[in-house]
Amino acid sequence: MVPLPDCASGEWGPTKATRLFGLIPITHQDPLIFAGRSLDLQFRMSRPLTDFMATLHKNGIEEKKLAKYVTHSTLDDIVTFIINFPEEGQYGLDIYTREAGSMASHHSNSSTTGEKHLLTHCCKYLINSSKRN
Image (cartoon, rainbow, N blue to C red; front, side, top):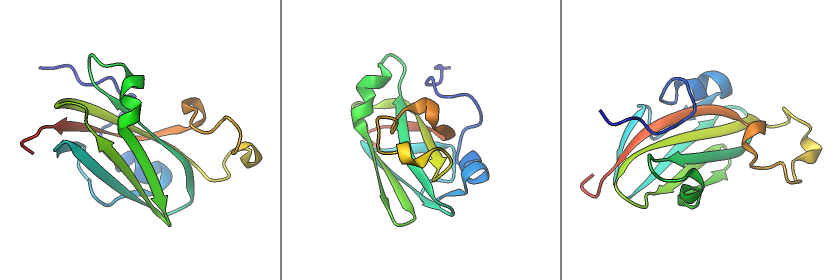
C-alpha cells in the first residue's frame, strides 16, 4: 500500500463541504477521482462563500511547488477548480473556504486573502492522474 498524500485530517470526499458550507458538488460526488493530465472540479454555492483556496499534495513533492498547478474561478454561484498535473501519480486535493462576511470583511482586500489559517478546510479528494484515463 502506498501511503496517502499528506492532506488535512478527516473524511475524504465532498460530503463535509455540503454539511459545513452548503457547497454542493456538481462534477465529482465520490472521494476518489480518476483523471487524465488535467481536471475540472465544480461546485455550486448554496450560500455566499469567499476566499477559496485549494492545495495539491503528492508524496515526495513540496506543496509549494504544486501550488502553481491549481487555480480556481468563480462565476455567479459556481466555483471551478482547475488542476493540471505535472506528472502521473496519486494526488490529494484540499479545498478551503470561508463564509462571506464571517470575519471582519473590511480586511478582505489586505494581505489576509489566501492565508490558510483564516480559512476552514471543507473537503479533500484523492486523485489518480494517468495519461490513460
